[in-house]
Length: 200
View (cartoon, rainbow, N blue to C red):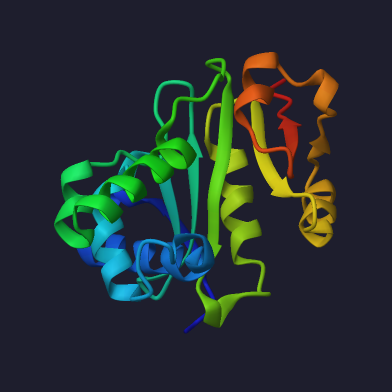
């Protein structure tokens, strides 16, 4: 590959690119998804329908997806799950369990104002990790999207990620300063960070 990265919305890409994006998502979050199935292809089949193309952005090199980032807002999350698809691929009990758990994590509405955007589902192809792919996609989004404040969460134990985002201009929001509605629905082991964009 020639090393030139371009960033596009999934809505601009072909079905094959979207499936590549889902594959990267599954590989990156396999441990958290493996309660559904240990088969990667089955996980891709289950989840492919749920990706909201307008909320996902992909980094491409030579027309191959190498990284993704989702941007959720107060009016639209990055996933829209259909319980029938879960039941189709996983059976009734596991399908309904999977639907409910992922709905809570990736579709439940967020308490965000119109100027805020929540960055989630950051993932890079295993062959391209450590090359700054996610950072380049994020830089593009911060430059091109119209929001004034960007939020993201990092696991408390992932100190390297916290330091990385701090270098990118994000600051940690103390628990006591987080909106009550937001704080109540988030997991305690996660750190909430934000970056404000100067539009002047």
